[in-house]
Image: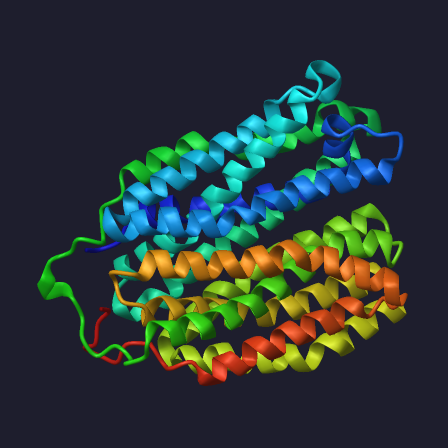
Length: 416
């Protein structure tokens, strides 16, 4: 089967919606807290909002198992249609739910339900969609195809940063509280019907003819790949969420302006969009291992010096330059890492196993990274806390990468 541009777009749009929603919620957590969890103490309201956001992470492993199994038993296409529909419906529900002042306790209940449904959908999105990308791509372009999943995530980072910047610049605080944050969610929800239409046109890659089944895959037990994959994805997740935390870090710890903080978000998104397809193509040319290991080593070495520079300078140039340096290395390594994990799993368990592994990494470490970094920064009083937290995650990922088998197909080799 020859994948078309529309197929790639249909798959990638789910990742874009996921990251747009995540960052939009993070940017407007205070406003959401005031709308649905009013309190005389602003901190209490904010914490309730963040707890509701975190509740969605609890459902991700469940979605990874349930929707992933649908992807392995029935097909990648129905699994992707289900996850995207639930994702879009929950996002729209959050934007349109009346405030606590309007409907009372029903408001926070509806918001919590929406976040749980969305967490379930997001947990089931990655496995089937990444399996489809690997199976639909030509053997020599799998890394590039998988990188496009990440590219759309970074495009969403860029979009959310630009939307947040535009709203903060053009609306008063009262307008943002009243309806501005809802507008940000609805802007993202506009792509839902288009994404659904694109996914309905997808072919199915699960039930391909037996003669297309490939031989020569690395002989590694699935549980070994799961353990290594979990460590690799954990490290990547920590890096991603520390970089996403830079907006809050810039404002709360470094006391830089909102414009500079959103500028770092935009720079992170643009850098990812540039370097991730390069990383995917390099992985197709030189193999997965060297392309994921070399940038990860560089990332391990530069994390502390970069944050030292950012903390000592406390300027927009330092913050944005540091974000670009860190994101470029992450961008080069991430596509080959995800491709290697996906290629190493057999077709009959690929979507479910990958989905569960990814969901656990995101739930445990993605859901806790920003809270942990903020808490540790406050407890230690050190603005270098994000650097050490990121370095620890990268070290774990690097150790697993060194043990990971090479999965890139040799000439004439295909995917099982």
